[in-house]
Image (tube, rainbow, N blue to C red):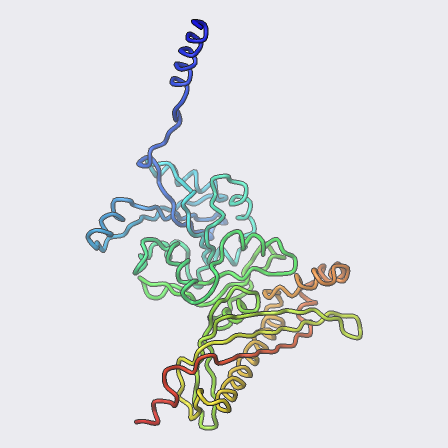
Length: 383
């Protein structure tokens, strides 16, 4: 019994003396990175910019509505990401902490050079946060965008994430970017932002990065084109469509939800693949300046047909432009061919960009008015 008691006492002291956090780092010893920006330097190096949270400023903003920044931006140049990060660390008295990063932003110059070399660090480094949203700055630098204080959000990364959601697009995280970059049948379509003036930035469309050429920038789609492209690949939840619907040039706008997309691969008589795109959605009429009454069946069907035809034409124009001007598959047609006809894909993937530009594509759009709105006729009739 005495031996058991002595053994218990020894174990008690061993446990109490060997437990605890011996390598504990206090929060006030860390620099929390909320967003990272990458720009191309003229000498061939890259410039890394980190947006770092200032906790005391965040607390002041929440309690006193301060107009000061809740962050600071530190930049450094290097041969690669970690080389620049080491130089950046030398400028700070706190250790860089990457786990809270919300955004990875590429300046246009970096995107034009190619961002393929950036993939390894973000995957290999265990401290890297792959749930960060990814964006490209059109006609600007990531450093300048990170220095802008958002109107409602404390950090640029959070603002970029919320802007994508507010326009009905699914936020584009790094894991999505990595999946598209490694997919031989699809080109990454990355949200693009533009700096407006000195203190604002806005979502202006999407950037196409060529995964057959070190993820170099191929070009940009405007906002409307990007929403249609996202609809086709299942990354758009809502969209507004406007078109002329009567002989007098009257316009009607419908806010669509329940967006659906179906991409079907068929083989022609010659054995070559062709694509059928089927888009559908339904929503409410949110503006009507035409002579048609959407609460009446015949008029509603006219509005639906006009909006469907107009949207179909825009999608066809978008596909034609991407096929012949950019020759890069942002719609994932190659991925669908790979899944449906894997043996056929083996002969196409070697020169897919050229095959994609010659691929026959048909489009069908079906839109439905579920709610005519709170007014039957256009308000101009009562004026």
